Length: 312
Ligand code: SAM
Image (cartoon, rainbow, N blue to C red):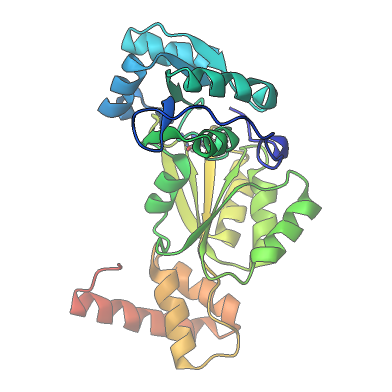
């Protein structure tokens, strides 16, 4: 699996002659379908995705060796057209030509939803510009699965893809969005997880977070805690194995606080954290005595239990 390079996302495409229109008003040629595939468990391939792959004239894919395995699972043989970061500019006109000839084409990535940190956006843009029908067979996507399992607020979120691999550049990327009141979702590799967590802690403060690993696979794990707890854990345990999505909660309330700020910060931290962890994180963030914050956290928690309110 590869990350979409800037060259696959930023360059303007060359203008192309507009082909004759098909009988369907406004649409020409065939159809491009963005087909989501499993991120680890073949059982997650949807019926519509399987049906589309069966009916497709050809399949554009990142790595044909990976897609062949999926097709073997379905008992299918199809023409595969490699479309990845290193050949996208050269291949795009050829794919468009096939679509203009009326072919039904599926675009898949190695795993998950195409275009999400994977190639395809320029192909969609070009097809749409030329009036070719574009549709999608939605399905698995690691960032969304990680978000919904994280126990962090899911009403406002920002997906950051992969941050820069170098610590200094990564920290300045994080500084740009540090004040944003949104949950952050990002990809990280297992060997870089600890340094990434250290950078997140240094720039964003000790926010609640989750490390989602090996989603849908045998060793699926979601580790929730404050960033400092996660740093401590991975310092002791060493790097984990497998594929990882990091989810980080929005900023806690501002340091100048009254009771309302403290309560807001605690309510937010109590989503996905135990009372003690939440109290420690909020006390550190607001620079308040731990005992006082812990006491208030207990009161809020027991009030919540009495009222029988749900987190969401
Ligand atoms: N398009 C894909 C999607 O929708 O899930 C994401 C592609 S991106 C190139 C690959 C990254 O997604 C991996 O490096 C990892 O961070 C994350 N990822 C993919 N599968 C995963 C899984 N099963 N568990 C956790 N993270 C996963």
